[in-house]
Length: 304
Image (cartoon, rainbow, N blue to C red; front, side, top):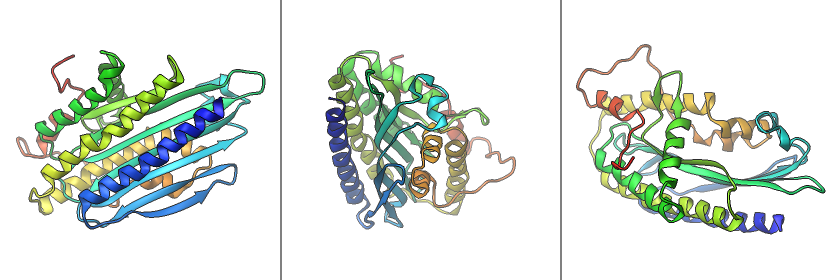
């Protein structure tokens, strides 16, 4: 039964990758995703798709991976010693979009499934995933829409699900060394195995299937907003925060590198350009300064 579950999830994820690429390429209108398939020596591989220098997306990637092996990397067993000595399968789709126009937010998401087995013992499995939004010149209308779609995806699974996973997202995508959130949040869940496999899998699908509904309307609203060198310089500066989070705090990056995943695919999330400026402070009351009001955990829907 364990491998039947794995096969069902893998089929869904490959289809999700297709649908995400189709929707994102359509809104871009010029760029196309190119595909690289790769194999992992220890077991498994993946299908990476990248778009570059499009009309909307300066760089974006939608990656599928399925890695497996006889032993988990230290990043996994350190926090869960009960997994030591088990073989494992990890399958997922992750995506990151870096638009060129600074008025369009960067966005990230992933959905994944993990199962670890040992002969004579019950398999250990769980789902994880979510999505989050990182604007440079945020618009309240966009942020509210983003969270409305996130809440609608969660509502069929319980009245407190959105609030719980929204709070987890705010906590996870937090740059401790900067004392700020990475953006305006969204959803984050991990270790999801309470209830039946079918219930948990249905929730994962609800999250994955709702991403385009959350993100594309924002792209369409902001894609023609004018911008110049000032906005571009600020965007590149703020992209530096994205790099800092992924290299310092992100567990998925660490797991991917330690488990022998393909480095190019793991680091696909990095922006094509970024910059750092010593002790930068935006001018008071400037559009750039207003971003600070959004880099704190807030109730965007007035329900908490």
